[in-house]
Image (spheres, one colour):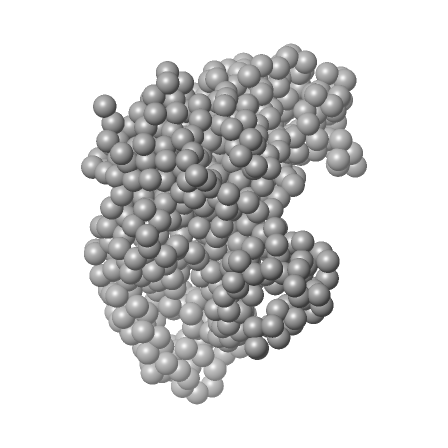
Length: 621
């Protein structure tokens, strides 16, 4: 009935979809197994993609040949570039999506890929022979053979939903939990744990008074996530902002004794940076209000997502409290918020390729690794899919360095440090934020996947070659073109910048604060004529390159020093206990985690600089 597949992907959430795409576009024959074909790429939580650091990840996914950025551009209802008041290393794209269109577009793109097949059924277990994963077992007793398997089970592994004192099995509202896989993996020697996440109520937008809330429109000239020619966003839906108040807090506190989080029924650790409303009130008792983002679910629905009001309190308490928020006085609820507990596996049990150390050909990606967020899940899925396809061909694993991508930081953090709470990406986690700007993801990453044989990148590589050439031309123009005092001084005075008294190079004007290429194009007709042929994004990258060259070169130098340690490979069979000069903690951690390189070893908690020196001496360095 079934052929033997190169890669089977279990789960069709954000990690699973990107894993299927990554493997298929590496030429592998893929089966995507899901419990429900109608919930492929479901936005289980908020109807948005991107945000601080997450937006950078989506641009990197796109540059690596993934589809999240393309799907988002086709289905967004609003776009904003966050942190524009800060330096470009902090600029982060974010889009509100039409939830139903997002899932439909993902499914369409997957179905259009000739290397992807589908099977709708619960996967109950894995076929393991001699510590090699050879396929999957389904709930009706089928065994489907594969040369590798990627598990992307999300919150479904023994999922347990909590609403007040009610609790019931489920991987998502209205969908049953997945059983069998955790128990099998634990029996094979894997370490599992429990985590918790939550979601807010969904409400009827027709019953809200938006006049009593703050308007949050999209950008006037919205950009894109994808580096390909996706559609421009010509009209947008607004979001709104409201706030809780002391009366809301008092009402919520009435239900605290029924909170599964406070009375001990929830054992898993929740996300520190996206706490429930009851957790916020408890932890930040000194604050008399918390911000709520009122987000539309799509063009053709009145359903509203109340971002910031995640809760597992009884539904009547949620309803009563939410009606005391300004603008929500006549609110009708579609469904209450809930918390969900689920199984995860410590990611220190993975190689840098996201293949498990215990079982050959078995890969983990997404929330099964203890992460939170669509973007983090999609990034892991793409990397796991690429590496599963490469493993089948007996090719070297594809690993991104911390200096190459936020995705490199994400994977490196997970496999070296593990996590005790749902891991979320922040710009502060990356040492090389200026190198990892969102506008350079294509220049950094597309050539890397093109080199390893990713299909369908010919047009993108042509665009990158043109972009590099254009950036060089723009920089040369600013270095050579002069500007006279009478041409530029009126503009400089208007922004409170010191006037010039002789001709200077245009680049020296650009280097001033509050001066950008777009402003100079508007003020100088000769600059407008010279620069009008270049794409806006190319001009932005050229400007950032010129303005921050000193910082960029310093980060490159730091990255080169760090990468020297990444080039020093460690013997995977070495007996660290034989190096008696190592600390006992170092011997334990190195033996358990088996780092690939000296660089990776240096980032393991508990490994000191003196331990690294001992390893270097042993290696003759």
